[in-house]
Length: 177
Image 1: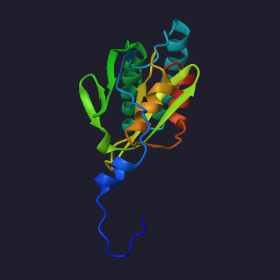
Image 2: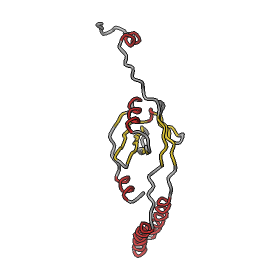
Image 3: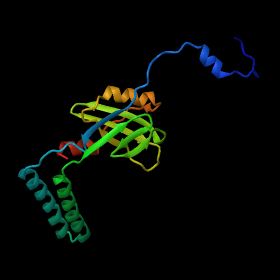
Image 4: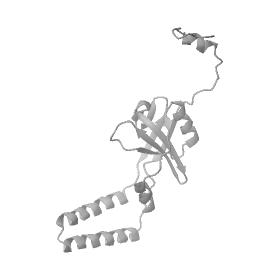
């Protein structure tokens, strides 16, 4: 079939005449995972952190930097809260409409790209969203099959783009967060 510049083609007829492959699109996946990997901290961890923070606090008091000293106290309190927090269980569903974490859906239309980070023991889905000031979303995979998840996302026309772990993520894991 030869076409000229101004010819109109009925794509329904072309699609009917073209051989069709019978490859079913992946359906959906669901899994549960902990919000983050919990690392219990012992007394030594708290002592080392406390001594460091108190040393900085004392140095700031000697330098008469009250704002810095109060900031370090606030930082110590926040670090204690994070160090003792236990992870919540997340219910995650990836289907034809998007990815839902605890019933909060991220539609595929809002996702720019994804990357499945699989470097045992780290097994995460990293999502980059189209919103300008939205940081990357990291979803733990738990016992989900990363190959099946990748196939599902590719079947929904999401671009796969390699993402690296940030220095913050690496340091947090190194220090037991």
